[in-house]
Image (cartoon, rainbow, N blue to C red; front, side, top):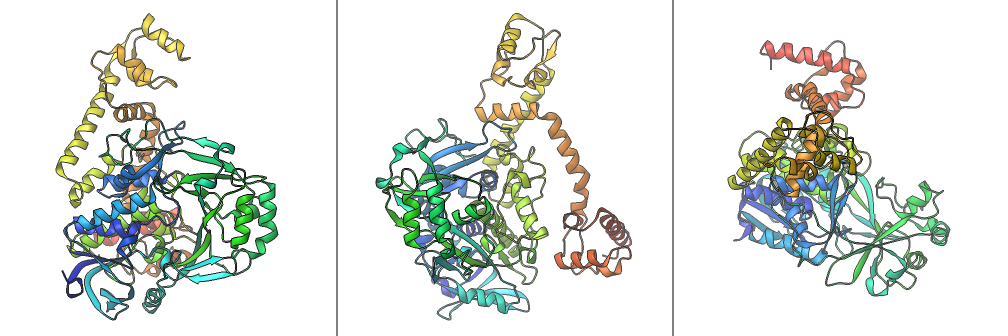
Length: 629
């Protein structure tokens, strides 16, 4: 097919983690979709650390998978180390993480894109977004050729006005040896977008054959890896898993960095952009945590076929000769050979408050933005946004209502709501601490939370939906049985309880009450009810969570209900806040600037008081009842 002579439902600019999920979602929803990128060979590229998941991020990957996205399946197929983070803590903060084989992950995603129905690819460089009367209608390529579409999803990653810094050297690039998208940035400016600048970075890559691992602490993969995708029953034993290694910087390392910090682009004045607070460069760590004598460095493998390691913890933009000295001062890296030097990178972002909750631009109808252009950092945050943007682009084409996830039902909903309601003045990273209702939006129940959305959108099959419903029917029946089943005091049960430091029974007790006790597991009580079955670990875990945290879960659900009505009260577009007496000038300005779509969003804007929300709610309800809106 000659892609240049076709009008598409959706064009996706970029093919990173946001672009891939956006394009796949739109195509799977039946839209003719064109993905445009410099090269097919960089689809799914892991520009920084070849890892998926992490604290707060694993939950995003589970939700992507449960909605029919691809990242979780790709991680399972290409993973070379799996770890469950916060495993000793409660289920609300447990997060999955894996190291992936960088090349295999990229090839997996390319294969999926290549074989996806309704999805086409074009190698090219986009210079302009075509807009007429604030409505997007296509793109213009570097060659001058125009391609038309009903919607456009913009996912340029770090390429938008990208600048790479190594010491005093600055290169216009989005990745090492890949040119930046400066003309596309100019196009956005001409459309009236304000462009901000954020900074991120990456460490040097090290030849594994030159690392002395005997001086480091080995960190193995979990004995039983937990998959990301709900469709993956287990990671096969034949899938080779590698170890990571832990070392640390020292006072000598710190002296080398401090003596040369004036050469760092962050501290020489070359970079004035805002950096990542939660993943700082080694220079930032020494300035902000000057009392620390050491900082951990995790040596993480990049793949099975290349002996290359990613030293997580020493991201830097220092000159190459200083990087050599710094690396060689670290225990186990004395003779290490640097294959590629680390660098700092600046890139353009738009204020995320320019977007609706659907990730559609408030300024340009039909233009959606996802990933780092919205001010986020991380593959998982990008992929989650890409999936939602792709879904909403498809719904826009079909003239259907946008897909908006609530804060009470997903990490993805929190991520997007934070961006569009509060904005961000630094690269945004997802954490469990950002999520108010984390006990009811856990990793393990993402399939339950997302399955109805996935089915309705056409992103998961009826068979998969039915299997999920059947799974949770089993869980609910077992929970109810444990709440009904009683057991009398006896030598068997009391022996188990005392051995696990729990008081023996003195009266007839429900099995659910016994299971609530600290240190008591489902397996301990199963022998005392002949009908309890040998379920999978995933089902057993959910039964335990729901019973042990019953009180806390009920409390969070009450909180959800208390505020949920605010999310259903819509604020008309272009609403005149100055017409409401009782709202301060400051609050009027904030509401006008952020343009919340619902009263719930207005409630979360910093500085908008509960009293102002009450006044606004009364006014809106009165107008609605009078049929004014």
